Length: 222
Length: 381
Image 1 (cartoon, chains in turn yellow, orange):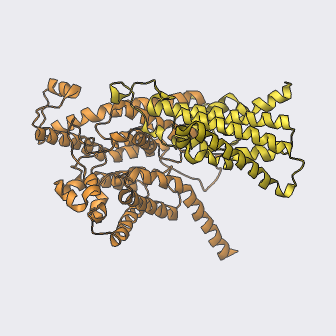
Image 2 (cartoon, one colour):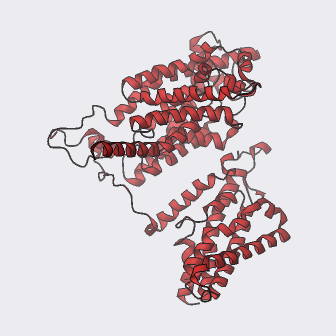
Image 3 (cartoon, rainbow over the protein chains, first blue to last red):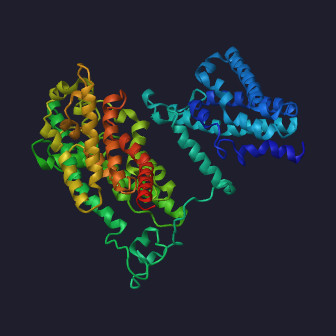
C-alpha cells in the first residue's frame, strides 16, 4: 500500500474526524452510545454501509448524470442500509431492538452522503473504499469513546461486565444518571474535541471575537 | 485619567482598548470584585435564615421522632460542646444548621478554588473573580442531606463547564452555580427527589409544600400544616437558602438599590409567573392539582424567589437591554409555571427555567437591538 492510500485511510481518524472536526453524524452519536455494545454494533453497521456505498458510487460515478446523482446516491445508500438492518435483525435481534430506528437512520447520516458526494464522485474505486473505511473508523473512535464513558459512569460496567461495584449492591459506586440520558454525549464529545484540538492544534478555530487580554499581569498590582 | 493608567478592572484580565484623552469618560465606581461583594452582602439574610431554618426543621423532626440528638459525627460534635436539640432555641438551631451547611460549603469552596486555580495556571492568568458568589449560591441551593462528594462534583462541573471553558467570569453564557446544580440534579436525581431529602434528619420524611401541591393541590398543601406566613418567612423544609421569600426580598431590594440586579427582571418574572398561572387556572379541570394553588402561594413556594433574585439577575448571563430584561424575566416566570405544573417529572422548574432564560438572553437582546435600529431608520432615514 503506498503512502497516498495510507493517508486516505488514516486521515479521517484523527486529522479530519467526521464527528470531531466536521461535526457530522452527531445525532446517532448521542442516541446509540448509552452502552458500549450498541455503540460497537452501530460503528460496524455504519462502517460497512459507508465503505460499500463509497465503493458502489465510485464505480458508477462516470455513468450517472449530474442532475440525478443525489437520487442515485440515496437509492444505493438506502438499499445498503436495509441490508444492514435486516442482517442485524437476523443475527443480533436483541441489539437491533435496542438500536431501534437508528440503524435505519444511517441513510440520513450526513457522513455517508457527504463522503459519497465529496469523495466517491471524484475518486477511484480503491481510494473511495479506503476513504469510506477511514471515515467509518473515525466515527467509530468517537462512538467507542463516548459509549465507554457513558456505560462506565452510567452503569459502572463495560460491555455488561460490572467493573465498579454498585452502591445498591453493597459496593461503593453510585451511577451517574445523567450519563444514561443522551445529552451527556454532548459533554463527552465536547471534551473529546477539546482533547483532540489540544493534541492537533491546527484544528483550533480562529477566535470570532477579539477581547484584549493583557499579557500576564504583574502580581504586585493586586 | 493619566493618574491611573491601569483601571481597576484591568486586574481582572480585561483592558480597555485605550484610555480616553478627553470627555466624556466612562466612569464606574465599582470594579467587578466590588459588585460581587455586594452580592455576598445581599445573600447574608438568606444564609442566616437558612442556617436557622435547617436546624429548626431538623430539631422539629427529631422531637417528632422522639430522638434527643442527631446521629453521626454531627451528633458527637454538638454533644461534646453541650449544644442541645431544642427547636425553641435559636442558637441550637443555627449550630445544627451550620453543622450541615459548613461541610457542603467548605468542600464546594475548596473544589471550586482548585478548578479555578488549575485553569489560571494552564492559561497563565489570574483566577477569575466570582468564585465566592458562585460557591455561595450553589451551596445555598443544595438539599441539606446531599453527600459532600456530590456537591464537589457539581461545583467542579459548574466552574469548569459553566464558566472556565468559555474563558472565565464575564464570558459565561450560563450561570455557573446553576450549571453545577443542574448537573447534580440530573446526575443524582434521588438526592433531590422525594420527601426524605429536604429535612436534615436520617429517615425522616417531610414533604415540601411544593411536592404536596403537585400530588394533591391546595388541599394537600393545607394538610402539611404549613401556613402561608411560614412559607413566606421560610420556616418550611427545603434547601438551605431558598425557603425564605422575605430574606430574598431583603437581599433583592439591596441589589436593586445598588443597581446590580435589574428590577425589570424581577418584576417581569413575577408577572410571568402570575399571568401564566391565571391562564392555566382558566383551563384547569376539577381534579386537585398544583394549578389550583393561588398565585401568592406559588411566589413563595420552592426556589422561585431565591432563583429569580440571585440567579436570573446575574448581570453576565441575563439579558442586557431594558426591553430585553422584561422579556427575559417574563420568559423565566412563564417557564417556571409551565415546568412546575405541566411536567410530570420535575416538581420544581426554577433552575431549568433560568438556564433556558440564559440561553435565550442573547437572542432576545439581538432582537431588541435590531428593532431599535429599524425604528431609528424609519424615524431618521
